[in-house]
Length: 212
Image (cartoon, rainbow, N blue to C red; front, side, top):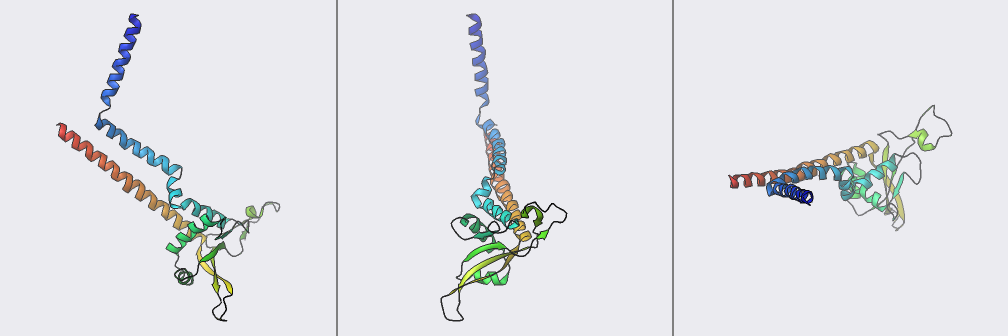
């Protein structure tokens, strides 16, 4: 009986000691560490990429790099590809410097296709029974085409013509997405979480000054 009582007293003392450590200031110290862990976990599982659509743009880049041919490397503005298409289009609108495409994008016509154009390069010396995707590759300077359906104004009809031009290269698209990742890391990691850490530190300093 005395042993059980002793154990209860010890357990209570440990609990009381633990609770005494749960001061507001100590919780603020813990919050700073938790913010860092939270940021790293969220970044690792790709939450930010999903929120801004970068994951779909990366999926689009992977498809455009594929030499498997149609339909993998052709991304249409339809129900099946719409999320990938819009993610790519958003970034191409922002970064594209090709004058012909800029004029059309700034006008009233909407693109319906984004695709890699040109012949891929063969990897010599590999078995011929390998898949096409394993035997060929696209270099970084491979052009990416954006195609539009426009009315044929010259003959005075409403007939739809397919017109398109180079919007970027695979290397440029990859650079845009890499730079976007760096910007996300800066604004979310440095600005958002950094500001939160500074705020928590300020509150701790204020509490310490008040208790002094």
